[in-house]
Image 1 (cartoon, helix red, strand yellow):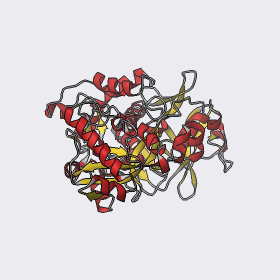
Image 2: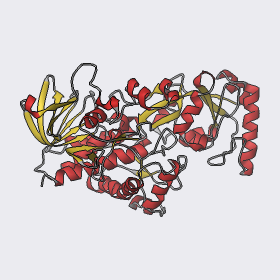
Image 3: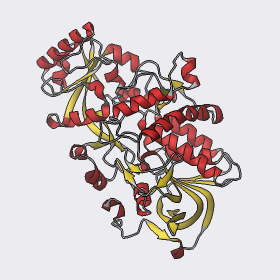
Length: 477
């Protein structure tokens, strides 16, 4: 067990308290700690037996977590929505892409299982809960071999969360409380029996099953420093405030195994001047990044997570994202985040690459030469100076650009779980009555930043959330 996981919090309160030391105030059947994508989906899945009482506790004033900050795009293979769009692929194709991206460092059995379950997840959301999703077939994120993103309206996670919250609030046997942090697990001889939560005052809630959906630890600088590579420590944190590693520490205190704790998702294009995300669809439609010398510094299509480190290593930890009006118009009205970035004055425009680059703090003459070289290679369909072919398209005036920096979005390491989301100890035994999903569970991205394939976060968040909810419900039948 990692020593950090066993460390008592700075306030002196243990992560786990014995059932002998508390008196129960209230009870429920399934207690879900966290109201992000994992928790909301887990609650819906657990509620499908109307006799099962489900309680969701979210420590923030509103639900959503990192899911609300994402595009809300859920990767899945072999779905009806794909077939209706003329796309034929299998879960094995999706699993191959994920494993190739992380150099087969992730648990292969778990990756393949989650990919197989992704089909059921999408059909369940759309058919059983009437969640709005559509196929994205106008661009692919780096290293995706097929169009498999299932997106909410506006390609915005806030819209996905809003629908999930509405479904939760309209389900009679689910109680949803915000401003209600889970502070401790309550256990009896290693088996979880409930939680202590802050509901105005601390209350002990007895529960048959507890699902940890508190996300990862990217908002906990101490844990990031202890576990992740040095360069990401100084990155802008762009995730939800509540991601402080609570569930990871809770589970570890009961002997839960931790894995891939160095894994995380970075992002290369957060606009420095406005703090808005500049969607990577800009890059995958042909945009490029240059440093203040006006030069490329890597293949942008390799992936936005690892490219965050490449940006941070540039002078001042900054880069310039350059694209053109074709890309601007293609994305406007498709991504709500992009539209909001436009409204906030994120992008500048000019007929001259040199003048635009100079305005953004880069060597204009060299930037113009760089774009000319890129255009020549893109027009010929050949690898350019950094080896890029994927998504390359010549750029034409008028040009657009913004200054960007690398950011940390969320961590991908956490508690090892089985196919039902049950937390496992290092000896393979199950922590009785305890589940985890999303950022609280070990993800499918292997190690570091480079193993992250776009959508891996929601694959484990919604995938494990549903599986944990189903198992918790069925084990009570």
